[in-house]
Length: 91
Image (cartoon, rainbow, N blue to C red; front, side):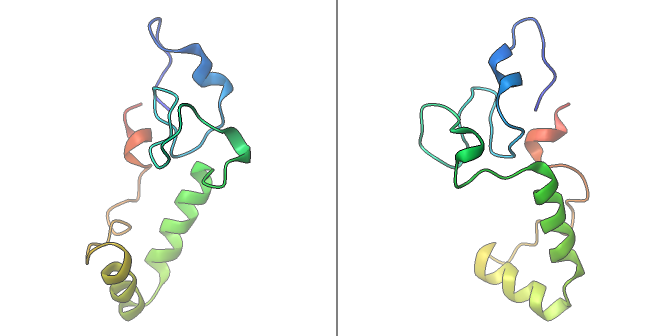
């Protein structure tokens, strides 16, 4: 989540620390008017995102290639994602 400024929405501080939460309080994955909170089926903590990227990097080359082809159009976003997701890098 980006740093809170005078013009930022203070309500963001009350919302969960979800990887899909955007600064306009909406979800980047679901078409909803505002964040559904921790009860959302798509709620994903940042720690779980980091763990999933580490897990993908630990797999053998053949398995990584198969996953990349099936789910990421041949790209391997976990290879260069040793840092936080884009939404978290702006801090």
